[in-house]
Length: 253
Image (tube, rainbow, N blue to C red; front, top):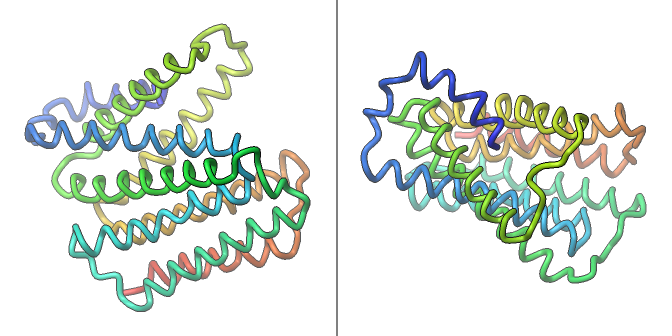
């Protein structure tokens, strides 16, 4: 997140230097809290993997469209509609099927503390929903680059505190690891989260939220190419359901 912030910051210093003027005092606090929510999402999700099965963690953390749909209806007056609600449920069913495919392939069914790990995954899902909902609200009147600089900085600082609290090393990594960190900053950070935040200005939060369910499909394809992990028929069928659900949600009114 620190590297992602450093990649975005030059745009702020050149093209968007005067855009912070649109920030109200409350916007600074809300954007900072949003960055903290993103950090808690990362921390809770990654920590849940140590306590429960991968399948359970992924399924629960990817339930965030349900929380987004509820929050969008209550807080943003977004109409979910029958077709969009159906799309969300179909996509979530696909995610559950993909996780079932992992279990059938021999994944660990239970971790050392599954209830604790599952609870952390749910916290990760709720924080991801907060991140999307608040982003949708602020991005209607705040420019993209200033917004993401504040959010990413708050996220990086929050994770920095978490790392210090856990006594984790912040240096001493090899060249390979730093290249991986940089690739994560360019890919999932700059081209992932930044594009998501751009979309929040133009597309309703429920659509953006469900589109994020395509992430496990991309991860599965990368697993085939990089790790020679060929998915089974249940995983393939689940991925197809996810794509259908995303399509229905995007077309829903």
